[in-house]
Image (cartoon, rainbow, N blue to C red; front, side, top):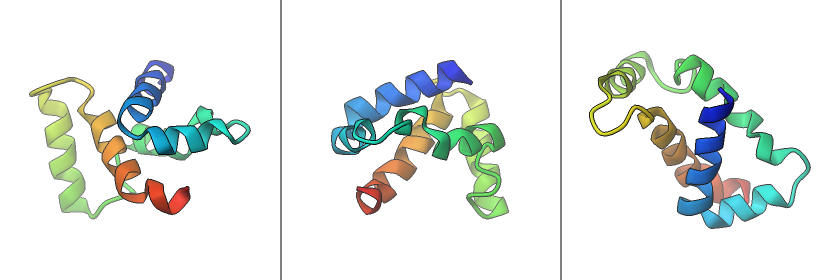
Length: 85
């Protein structure tokens, strides 16, 4: 889990620098507690069942990377990150 979070921090730093900067300004925000559930539950509670099944299938296929789930997390941050900031 910690390795996934480390990779995710790097993805945020590279792809969403404004959001990353926002996280660095808040105590414990870099723990990424908001996405522990995303990774642990593989988005089961975040999406409708059919969408979650499609996402799981994409993650499990390991087509381009075995870390596809982290790119899904990054997509969520990309969509909602500005609302947080």
